[in-house]
Each structure stands twice: as C-alpha cells, then as structure tokens.
Picture 1 (spheres, rainbow, N blue to C red):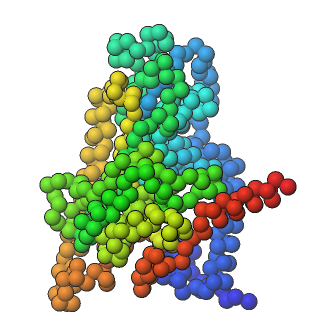
Picture 2: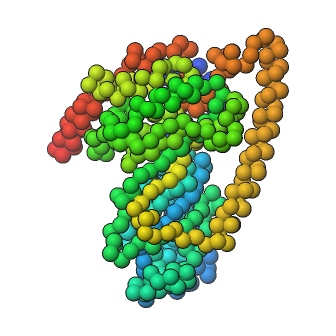
Picture 3: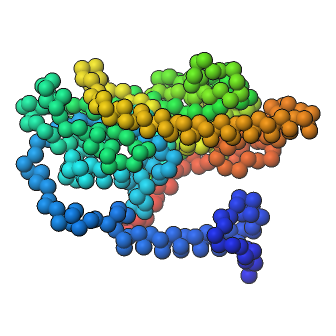
Length: 436
C-alpha cells in the first residue's frame, strides 16, 4: 500500500517543492481527493443557484419590464477589462468569475436586453483565463430610446440611452464599457466576430538581457499565410482541423519609445491577423522567449512551420496568460461610422485607471528598489554581474509555464505530440464508438 503524504496544516497551500518530493501514488491519491472535493463544491454551487447575490424584497416585488413596448437597435459595444482575476471571457457552468457573467448580469439588470438568447450576441475574441482586453468588441441588440426610423439621426444618436454609463454602474471596476457604434439597418446580421477584419494582440515583457534582434528576426518568419499546427494548441475535439492562419504584422516594439535602454524597459510582441488559433500567441511567445534567451535560433520558427518535415509539435511550454491583451479589433464599419463616447463616462474610466496605475506603480517601484539593493549585494558577494549569472537568476522563467529542466534539450530533439492526422483519426473512432 502506498504511503500517505506527511500530515500538514490544512490551511496552508501545498508548494511545488513539496509536490515534487511526493511519489506517484501519493499524487494520484491527492488528485482523486481534490476531484471529489471539487465535485462536492459544484453541487453546492448548483443548489445555491447562479452565484448572484440574493434579490432584495424590492426587486422581488418589482413589476416585470415590458419589452414588447420597447424599441431596439443593433450596436457594436467596445469593452475594456483586465482578466487577471477572471476565469476567461466566456460564461462557464462551474464559476461566476467570467467577464460574460458580469456583462450579462449588468445588461439584464439594466433592462437593456431581455435575455442573452434574444440579444443576437456575438463577441470578437474569446479570451482565456487571465487574458485582458483593451479593444474587445461585441455585437448585440439593445433597447433604444427611439423608433427604428429615427434612430440614426444626429439628434437621436446624441440623445440615445447612455449605454456605457448604465452598464458601468453595474459592472465591476475592472470591466468597463468604453464606447458604442450603431449598426446600419441594412446590415442586420453584422457580427463582431465574423465581420472583424483584423485583430491585434500585445504581449508585454521586460527587456532584461533578451536578444531582441533575434526575437524580431524570428517574428519575420511567421508573417503571411502559414500552417500553425505546431504553434498552437490543437483543438481537434471541437472540430478544428484547419490550422492555416494569416499574420499581417508581427514585431517586437518598445512600449515607451523614450524608454528603451534599461533592463527594466518594457517591450511587447505586437501581432496582427485576421484570426488566431487556441493559445497561438502564447505558443509563439513561448518560442520567442527561448530565442531571446539564446536557447534556440530564430529559424526554429521556420522549421516548426514546415509541417512536411516536422508534422508533430515538439513538447514545449507556452507563455504565461497574464501579459496578453486583445488590444484592437478593426471593422469596415469604422470607415463610415464613428464610435460614440460619453465624455463624462470616459473621464470616469480614466480616473479609475489612474488610481489603479498609481497603486500598481507604487508596488512595482517598491519591489524594484528592494530588488536593485539585493542585486548589488549579490554582485558584491559573487564577484559577478547579475546578468552574467543569468543561468542562476533567470528573470523571464516566470513568463514560461511548466517546470524548467536542469539541462536544456533543443526543440527538434524533444519528444513530440500526436500528429494532426492521428488526432483526427482518434476522434473519428471515438465518435463511431459513441454513436453505437
């Protein structure tokens, strides 16, 4: 019988170091225990409802809103959010900590929509857990103050319901409605997802000792229409079997062009395309970090895009979710229409972000000040420059998920994942078995 893990204080989280010292049987027992506990919690959440706060007596006795008497209009709505504290954009069954949960809670509470099902809702990009968005766009049908024949006059647009202000009173402060745009009557099926012409993402990282010139060179290999099966997480189980995507631009640029020479200067991968695969950008960034650290040469991108010679993806870690931001979504509608802002509401959003920036920048400065002092002490004791000793003190390891190996194995010499053809064949057999 497998020995039990050592007894621990239940209020203390298990560290990675402790888990690495457990044997396989101990880890299996712990996983079974956690899955059982997770199942219990799901049942508790299910019994309690959708996780919203209980309705007040005033809300319970409130007369139902009569949507039959309302006018409606199709709009694009631009949403800003910081995804650090959320489980992703899309609604999920086992949590209320998603952007869409809070968004639709605000939309229904404000009676701007009757329900999600009747709102003709589309989102531009489905961001994952931890990912943020400055330029997320949704298309949706909202209640309007004006009849359809009067909605697009300048006077009506200026006196329309204050969509952003209404939503922002009900949304958490890290989710904000920024602007809206009317969709013309002759485009009733216009979709934030399917009519988006270009999506731009940014992935932020510090300069440190990274070889930026090699990272920039590597970016040049991914521009154009390519097969990205080795630079994404293949989602064949959900029917994705085509992995060609077109990248319009990809480059490593400074966030602030007046601050480029310090090790703490911030840079970002700026990448634009018509559409992206699951975890595509995080896989690309994971490879760029390996290149920037001198572990791989820039042409590894070209080799992995050559699926004839490399049909199987080598096993490697993708980059962390937190620095990724869906920064901009472009539409041809913007050529004829303008985004409509509420000046006072925009000022309110800026004020909130200024406060957030102040607090976070104070924390960053404090950590940086302490870090520099400790680095000076380290250099004095070791007689080495901190960046010469980067193998012992790697800054960017935290941006790569997974455990760092003691000995680095080049990508093309690593074990590989199942090929696309093998995955397709597996799911074909699975569906046949399930259909019997």
